[in-house]
Image 1 (cartoon, rainbow, N blue to C red):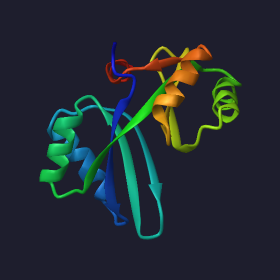
Image 2: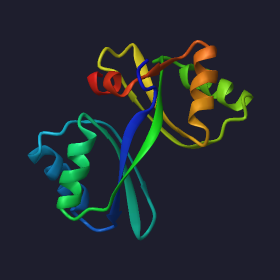
Image 3: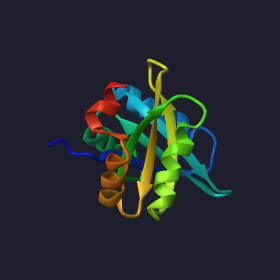
Amino acid sequence: MAEMKVEQIAVFLENKSGRLAEIADVLAANNINIRALAVADTADFGILRLIVNDTARAVQALRTAGFTVTKASVVAVEVADRPGGLAEVLKVVSGAWLNVEYMYAFVEKSGQNAAIIFRFDEPNKAISILQQAGFKILTNEEVCRL
């Protein structure tokens, strides 16, 4: 059975001009494609969360360029790209008392579905509950093909 968690990298960013561009340049120079991203920031620093087509190479390239990088496992849930799609997932999540640490989303190329990336405190429980509720959990490979 395919691994149902998706690898995500997080890059620590000093809050100064050009740092995001540097990351994009490093990834481009190493032929690494960004599939999804989210930025969280404070006054002093930010965290760039990325799902890329080659996690190991991205981590190596970014660390070589001097960035602080960590990896985490997240859960990618496919939902219909229509009003209420997110609400349906969150209703299941809330009803199961699952804790969402953070989330972000992107629309698939077809435009018919969206993928919501969740960081749960109990990812295996979340995967099981969401599958039982009829939601498709995307593998790392499936996310990278979107």
